[in-house]
Image (cartoon, rainbow, N blue to C red):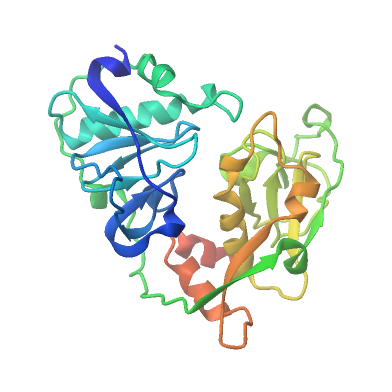
Length: 312
């Protein structure tokens, strides 16, 4: 069936987030970070607030499920498309169809963005039989340590070049590698397995405790590496200039990774673009990086206990 069989498409209508006064209404924008919630605002007269649970779809086919009421980003030519169910459906169906839409994101790019006509004509499979258990988000999340209450006083933009050494080396192609003994990870632009495509019997080119950033594929995908490794030619390698703080490096990798939406096949992440990035980092009253806050933020991430196990 098509998306049009299940949903009604609505266009968002709102001004930019920055012109709003702080309030209680979640403002939804592109991306998956914080489920697309940029912040909480007071709607401006004439803006369109949605009062039913719906799927928000960005121009790059990023679909998130939103609880009402919410105010979606609508300014400019790439505002969100809001999919409201034609008939009442349960939460599990809504998340099911949002997931299917996300899996079709490869069809869209900066040069071919999502528009209502393209979205509504997408074909998705029916909900499979046997979907009877209600979706309870908290039950889907892994158990971890208790999250800390983190209060950031101030953020400061740091040029990436002031924080990190940015390197790139040419390595043998995958088919040239000796894989008889698996002792060294070879990282590429893959988005899974921490960027590791395979393990091989070759000498490492980089020491552990650095991050790899993809310059192709899903550009900007970043991983912290726990072993000495080889990085492919389309992968940049970043290390801290003045510190050996794995928490800060992991934080930087996360901030780079959430900007992957900026890049696509026609606008890849080059070394030059990477060097021009700035990273917002919590600082103290003297505008020095607040490493304690950084450690708390990383500690609040799911899986942080695994990260700490390998770095401590």
